[in-house]
Length: 424
Image 1: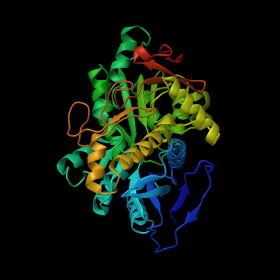
Image 2: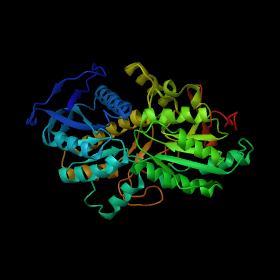
Image 3: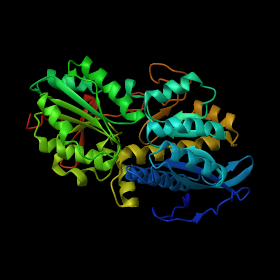
Image 4: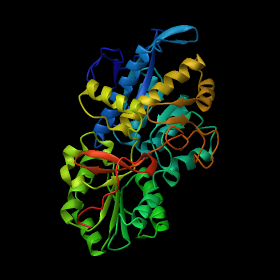
């Protein structure tokens, strides 16, 4: 069953207010229901929990700021969140969103995880005639699909920049560290392992290209199942190739943490790119010191005081540190959705699309501006544009040590200098 939670200021993270009986669809009750998609169960359930909590905090803050209730078509309406479980599975996500819209009365969708889910959801929300703002499906293959039929997918606002122009950009900082003598890899051999999803393959394509341009000898990436937890044989092959750099990404918390621990146990003289490891708030509890010296560009990071303040409020509210990528993005995109509805004054789809395309919003974690057409800063229509800090979608590189993340690139935002792992 799909469960809804009211975002009132006193609501606790685990509170449940009501379950719609089968066949019911609330209408005319003065409530506007917004769906929040995420993997609430399955191998990425901790990410789904972060999506849920970020959206709850956003609604609480909007309510405190006087943005809720909101006037729609002359009627004042309260806001209710409906949490839509994708289960990390495209078919399950499609069923869930249809149920949310057709049975539970959801009128707009916000957020989401996994590119494979996004590929299916683009068609689902188009068929349902609703707008979906800020799904974090990343793969460039989503953009290829949108660009083939931009009118059909005009209600889909891609909330994560594509790997070729964003997520694969490890080459330049790694080259800098080598040129400055901060990292002296024994060889220029590199290996890449990705999860077997649209996201994984898209990220792998981009990273392999970037590493090749930086001078590494990198072979086609290896693929593992999303729920894979044993990587010893793969790492043994990497050791036999004398690799000095390993890039990996997987969105399952157990798989990601096991890879990091097994990488450390293999004692390879190599640097690890752990893309996605910090998407789980308990990443250090799962890995311990095995994650030390790992580098990643997988999330926004606190640079400005207002971002530190948000992290502290999140910690106080939910009694845990925020996984910024899911929690921070769901917060920002929920605030954007409410802003769009307020400025539009109606839930008519075409007018919502027009408002969202024209919106320019300084969120907590990025400056958000959706592309009107493909270009250098976005690969497709309605994709969030990349940029520098407070100029667009932006992730710095951090190095992990002792459970802390310190920015090491770009240099103008660096909080520490890159450290070569002592085993290299």
